[in-house]
Image 1 (cartoon, helix red, strand yellow):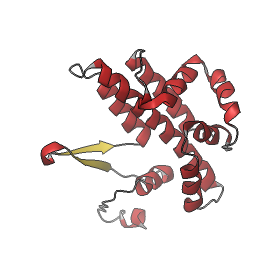
Image 2 (spheres, helix red, strand yellow):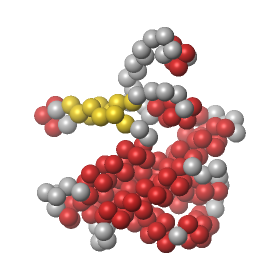
Image 3 (tube, helix red, strand yellow):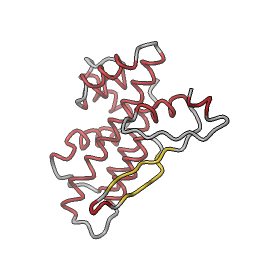
Image 4 (cartoon, one colour):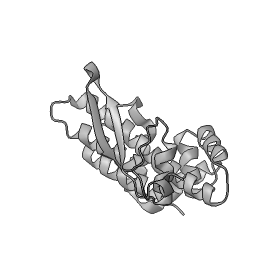
Length: 184
């Protein structure tokens, strides 16, 4: 309905829920999405966003490249953004696949909520079966060592400091998230 109304009018929607932007992306509808964030001292930041994977990878890269941020802080924050990007890629694949099969939005969201840990979430993205967690590492190995490295660090998330090169982690996480995002 909104897409039809937008043919002759400007449509502006304010929401805290990502389901509308997700549906717009999934349906390939032309739209401009802005994210509004209130920072300290009520400073408002508005930025145009694309999809969650791109936004999270951009945030990870920005933190990794911030020169005046202590490395100890960046090495804990960047893996969390990378993990969130990989999770977002998985969720997009699962939503697209399950909704195309006629599953309800509620059923898909319940499935994602019930499988919020990284192993079952990636198993859902890779195999459409959350119980195939033992098959995740062999499949990632077929993709390459970069995929295993990114997954291993993302699994730790912000729980441990990442000792490796942050830019490489961001690049590998982006590659993994985008690969998962388009899983058939």
